[in-house]
Image (cartoon, rainbow, N blue to C red; front, side, top):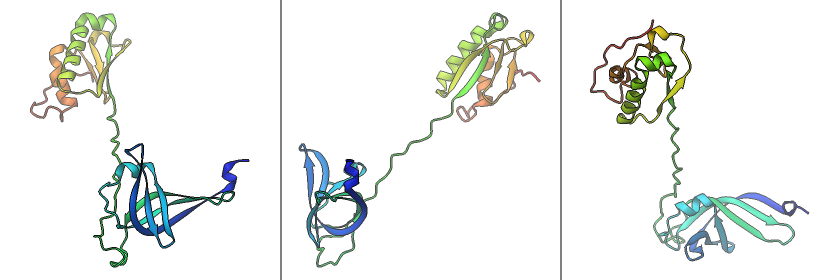
Amino acid sequence: MNKYQNTEITQFCFEGRFLDFVIKDGYKLKGLMIMTSEGECYVKLAKHLRFAFDLRLPPGTFLQILGTKKYCTQTGKVKLKADRIMAATGDQEMNPTPVIQPITLIEPSHPKPEKKAVILMCQKSDCMKRGGKALCQALETELGDRNLDHVSIKPTGCMKNCKGAPNLVMPDKTRYSRIQAQDVPALLDKHFPKVTPHRQPTEVPMVC
């Protein structure tokens, strides 16, 4: 028989006084001992609370605890798991210790990775013979010097403009021909101006 068929899961919310921490293996925080109106009980902490909990919490602090309650109909055992804990505004006679601020969990920020920009560069023989190799080396060096780690160079087949070699296409789809190694700083200034604001963009040859 599935064990979950004998388990009832409900939400709970109650207030009580913090008694002590429950520590496993000498250092792992697992839960709290709480004194409620019905007596002493153990509340297991959800994983995100174990890492955020302030271990300086003084005994006697009045807390409000929200979470899930599992009741086994076969054994009659109850398991409490806290998903949220905050300071409760209980009666001062019951709570002589100062009311602490709500325990706020700060979710770790996950910044979106910067979109990869790709420079397409023809690597056929005509482009390579007309300065393409030096152009590729200059691009790689300049991108590294400017910390443009999100920009990569992708070799391509013939761009059907051999007379205008070497040819390349910038991430915004702008096509350039007859670009030489010495044109690279101006080219990057034009397409990535925020990286080097001290430079003034200059004209670079471009195919209409």
